[in-house]
Amino acid sequence: MDGELVVASTRPADGTAGRRPGRQTHRRLLRAVLLTGLEDRVRFEAAFTRFERRADGRVRVWLADGRTDTADVLVGADGVGSAVRRQYLPHAGVVDTGKRMLMGAAPLRAVAGTGLPALIGDSGTSARVRGMTMALGAHRFAESPATARDRWLPALTSRVVTDAEDYVMWCLPVTQAQLGRAGSPDAVWRLARGLAAGLHPTLRLIVDEAWPDVTVALRIGTIPPVPRWPAGPVTVIGDAVHAAPGFGGNLAMRDARRLCDALAAYARGEQELLPAIGAAEEAMRQDNVPPLDAQGGAPPREPRPGAAAVPMPVGRLREPLPTAAPARSSRTTDVVDATEAGA
Image 1 (cartoon, helix red, strand yellow):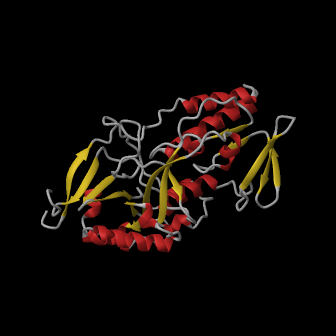
Image 2 (tube, one colour; image 1 turned 90 degrees about the vertical axis):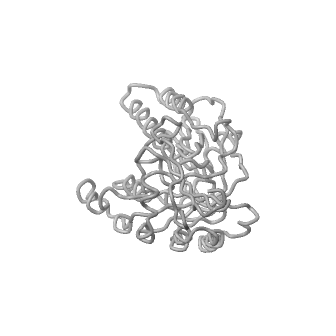
Image 3 (cartoon, helix red, strand yellow; image 1 turned 180 degrees about the vertical axis):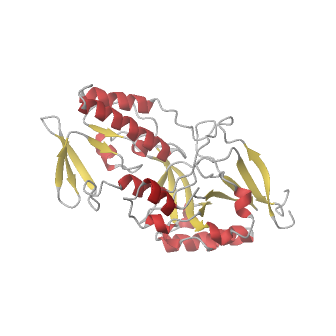
């Protein structure tokens, strides 16, 4: 009111209104944790190009660096643009919804004195100002990542531990015409600054202080339900097969755990390989993937952290910081500039 941002309304995020409670996760730090101890197992700069099922039931893969590899199982966990899915399930296509958004993050310290972090709380937030919607989410570590590392995982040496800090994630809707040919992170960041020029000064500050190298342009795509396929030594998980609006990372982790358990049961001699994979795939099909909206149509016009459809990268993008996951607390907040007409 009187030029200040205020909370206009809240909605429960405890599951009673279809929103799921949860904790936010720093994607890069989680990735570093998961890779710890696997340095001799993980190879980078070796993109998958194609596979071939051999007569002995195993799978041979060709990589972009010219090497090949052979294994009992090939898992396509390569996201919504999955190269494994394109060959294995060519009928499972990605549908472009036509929607575009700009996404980035700014250090929380940049807006610490504005009062905005308190308005956002721990929930996904939608700020509406003069016809434009800006999605916001704050990530706060419960304790220093370095302190947690020293206690729980001393072997983690990645710089992300010391570089990680609290931040505010933001999203702005954009049209394809506005996006134009902006492909580099710096060009996308400059475009976002222009779009935010008419917003409240605090909201402009978030974009102005954002990290340009993690500012990205996204087009929103979905994968329609895929008919059941026979189990084999090739499988796909996560967004590679059931892209879920806002919950892709969570479902991918669940899929991975389920598949891991199935493969471990096979290794212990408790189950044959293909039935074990088939059971994991069937359980994956039964997961409750949230609809894009109440009618199951296009994604909502107002993007919210943790509730946007799965992003498909546009142009050459670097790995973005994560969108904020469903809220720690039990509310979802709308913040509006109350000077806007009708507020």
